[in-house]
Image 1 (cartoon, helix red, strand yellow):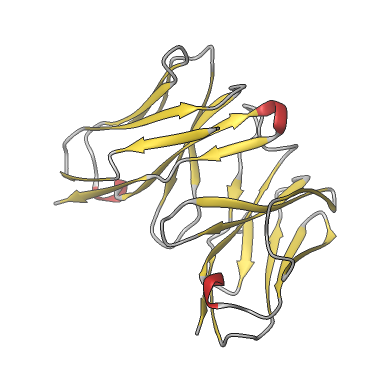
Image 2: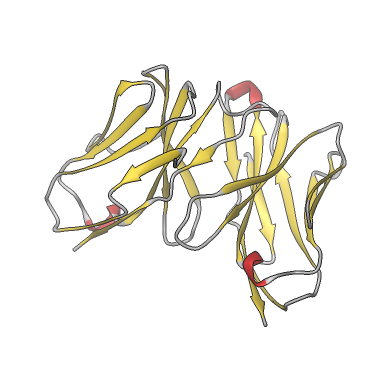
Length: 116
Length: 112
């Protein structure tokens, strides 16, 4: 009964390909996120959706497109993959905006993307 | 500029010993401070969340402190266990602009 699950765990692909990562949460949360963790281990927010609406869209190449079919799912599609896209991508969810003291973020286990 | 800095970058201690990790922040307006534990190959898991009015909060062998005046926090781990080996990340919330500012983490290794 994983609270936030994302697939696949590992993704190895060639430059120029298009790939998707899927995320689902069963916590009944309103808000879902995509984070990128690079080789220096900083977690950087990419997108945030609240009840299927985009509320945070950081400076991310438009090759990255999030899609939220319902509030329990947030998928990430990446077009024309580049070497610099190699990283670990984490999905997360929270109730509300996630910034108040009573709103924890719950993370998935991550997707290790390797672009060759 | 909103920033969170952690020290040390990495730390190796023997099982059973105590350790303290540091977090300094320059985030305004401050709302709350969180410590997360991230095991290798896993997502971060919340350990504590503290508001400006709290100066100590414990979660088992983990005790976080907060000094909102000096903008410093520490995470003290007592009687370390092998399972404490992980990265510990300090995160500060700037509520008015819905931001979470993440530190780079401290990588802790516990040796038997």
